[in-house]
Image (cartoon, rainbow, N blue to C red):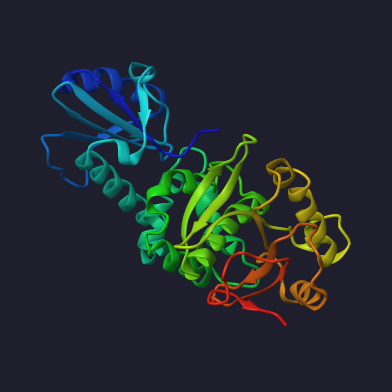
Length: 335
């Protein structure tokens, strides 16, 4: 399975003739490539190329002096096989900016509704335009409301757009967007679990904490977030129970207990305690959540916060144990 889009770097001189012979011609023979004029210009002395394939794939190439960068959601020409890969923030600004504009224009041409959500489009661009995941990741927002039940695509996409537009996760874009995956089919359970991490990030940020994702701990595991302010330094791990209709457990209360137990008997047990467990029930429909909010079951880990978010921004839940985070401003706690 291909990973989110990254650049390949070639520390060599590329003439126009070499581009035609070693990039365009092999791609034309294999998958019907054609060279088209780039849609945007760039500065910094870069010569740019855009290649469109008969199967809908796209590739970009920028060259200058004795270096060049390649990016594409298609097969890589053999002349670039042994080149190193770099992230969006690791290449020259003019190259990154040009590639971004080219890809965003194509994305919004293919899925025009996403143009109304510019920051989300930019944030998830490495997967929205990836080789294997470009259909499934867009479909997850378009057809599956990003994992929210009984909700439309626009209200759910607006929910994530409003958070991502704050820029809180911008510098972690590659790792966080990659959590959505680049599978060629929609795995709603796994993708919804990935979006639970974005909901948790919104909660922590709304509560006034600075967050850092993917915190490595001494056991060799990574926990989802570190939340900090002037007096607080807390690790947070997020889990998202499957809706009861999609699992073998008997009912929503059992779903919450069993999912939390899997997490606490594994990753958190190895960590040795101290982290706060966030149990995100945002995949639950109203009746399932009503059962959980009525019983407020223990989740076999303390401290823990069990909650459900809705795309209109409402979040309600309950605590178990002494939670070292002041979340009242971001979450309505049940009595």
